Every structure is written in structure tokens, then in C-alpha cells.
Length: 256
Image (cartoon, rainbow, N blue to C red; front, side, top):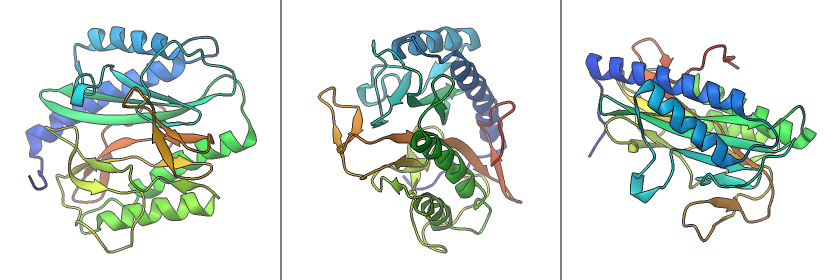
């Protein structure tokens, strides 16, 4: 299919959709607390999508059954909301997509449940958030996809954690997954060139232990093989003439 460069109207639609997605994820982040289930979060998302009158990007995608992917502790990605009760100290990623004017945006937020968690879990979450911004700051016209991956990989490995090589970011627009692939590893100066009007989803997916994983019997949920912790954090990012614009930036979110 090749890489689709968005025009001004498409960018504005993605900007509007991204703003709605950011608001939904912020509400869901505030909603998370010990004692609720991941299905409760899914039901809250359903209310929010109805309120904003937007379509979920994930539900029905290759048969995926839910609005959200909610991955807890050793779940890496694609966790299907269920009756699992969240406990104080759990970590989770809520990954969500909005389809607005036929254009997709995609974002995920890494969350610590409750007041506190283990030092390792806290470091993992903070490393993932910072790694995302390390990648985003490499986004500018003329740079390469490899510059993004190299920056993420360097920060994650320097913190003592690992990326999962086969799980990557991607272009986004009329399709949820478009060209190019945006790996969380790479070599500076290598890969597709970043061109103004490209929109890419950058999503560090990192683990505390081994990057080896298994897929559960539900056909979706990917878990660490060693049972160690994992986390994901993601934004949809526009390449501009002068740098980047984060289309899914949440109100009050810190740029790390």
C-alpha cells in the first residue's frame, strides 16, 4: 500500500479524533482504582464513546471483541477486558483507538493501580513513559524511523529492561495499521524517512525480564513467558515541517 501522507483536512480530522481519544483515556485513567474489574473499565469506555459519539477503532478489528485492550502485570498487549479484579500495586496499560471521520488514532496509557507498587514496577512504568518521549523527540522531517527505535531501545536497555522486538508501532490513518512499521529498536539513520504529513503510532512495549512471550487460549492476550512484568505506553504523532505534534496528548500530561 505504501505510506499515506495526510492532507490538511485529514490531519485536522485526526487532530480532532486524537483530542477525543486523549479525553477518553484521561477519564479512564482517573477511573482506575483497586477493587474494580477490567470489564468495569470497558463499560466505562462504552459510556464515554457514546457520549462523544465516536466509533471504537479496535472493536471488530480482525475480530477483536472489545473497545479496549487492557493488559495487567505479566500481560504484554491485547488483554481482553474480563472479571479480573484490580489490586493495589498492579500495573496496567489501557490501549484504545478512536475512529473519527473515517480516520483512526491510537494511544495507550501506563497506569499504577492505587497508591503504590513495587520499586521495580514503578521503574518499569516510568521507563516506558520516558522511552516514548525519547522516541517522539526524534520525530522531525528528514529523520528516519530507525532514529526513533534507536532512542527507545537505548533508554530501555540503559534502565535494565528489554523491548519485545516483534511488537512494534505503525503508521495510522484510514487503517488502524498502516506503513511504515515503527520498531522499538533500530539504527540511527536507517529505515523509512519521516515526511511531513505522516502520522505514526509510537508505542514502547517493554518487559522487566525476558522478551519471550506466549499467546493465551483466547487468541489475543500476549503474556510474558517468565511471568515477569510488562507495560506499554503510546501516542499518535504527526510529522510536521518543524518537528512533531502529538495528536493524542492528554490534558495536563507531562512531556518527559
